[in-house]
Amino acid sequence: MSAKKASDADPARSLALLWGSHTKPGRSGLTVRSIVLAAIELANTEGLDAVSMRQVAERLEVGTMSLYTHVPGKGELLDLMIDTAYGELYADVDAPSRQPGGWRGALEYVAARNWDLYRRNPWMLQARDPRSTLGPNATLKYEAELRPLEGVGLSDVEMDSVLTLVLAHVESTARTGADLLRVQGESGMTDNEWWLSNAPLLERFTDAGRFPVASRVGQASGEAYQAITDPAHALSFGLERILDGVAVLIAARESG
Image (cartoon, rainbow, N blue to C red):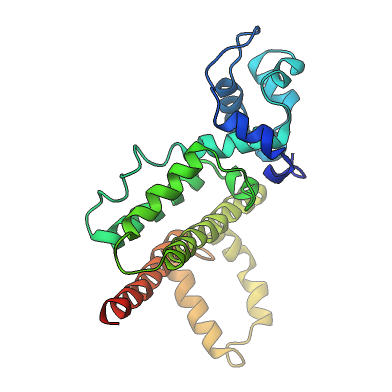
């Protein structure tokens, strides 16, 4: 399914599925929801490339053609998977706005919830498409994450831009974390184990006299992280700097 994106789906068919009933069973007893949940489970256990209509059908112990009476193809299935996963984020549309700390506390909460979502569903980092059809959960997500910025002095475009910046930072750091876990799994070595086994060879080619700043900073970072990098630290450090900048923008709007 690696070559298949949500954008391969027919938008009209996806919209009808996304906003329709997911619990009405067909003749086989299947529902759209049961198919989608099986696909998500498969993606989380075996990776997105393992997801196909045939593999999902085998997991549900039904014939492949039974799935097509509910979901017309892989593209539409991916749209449904993404929107269903977004449904895990918030209990209701005002959940971010209820967090302490005003707009800043709300955006910290939004970042944490999206980070956790990617950690639970790493396949989303591969599957998410900027042209994915907006379903009910994706729409609620956007509304919920924008509401804390309402009335703070930003224009509508600035509100969207702030949210986009925060979510892009979360996605980037989550992707780094997922890549590190994948490499560790493939190599059978932690970052620290890999570094210890390769350090003698690396030291032969990296001269501290020639690269003094890189050597010093690299050593300090490696000792602090006990790894090549620390995605969780990158998330919190970058988020604080982003929100500091947003605070400056809001203050400028208030004074202006």
